[in-house]
Length: 114
Image (cartoon, rainbow, N blue to C red; front, top):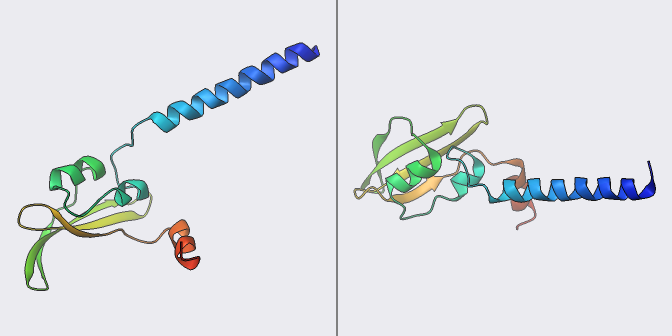
């Protein structure tokens, strides 16, 4: 092949890679129990908002924490060994959540205090 042909092919390949990465970055996040989705859960969100992010939960239970009755809901992804425990108040709003087991990167961030 000639030098021009190699340059054209390399340029087309680079453009194809850039377009593919851009399309993947712009796709919306899929619902499900992933670390990225768990980190999106914030205090005050409604049950419906959390369910839209994480999907269908396991059956919940009512518990009393520091004198307040809250509903404990668990979402899990056994394939990725990821889970989230979210506590809701009487108005079905997030009181707090437990993000599940720490990932390697979370441990690394904690180690370097980032």
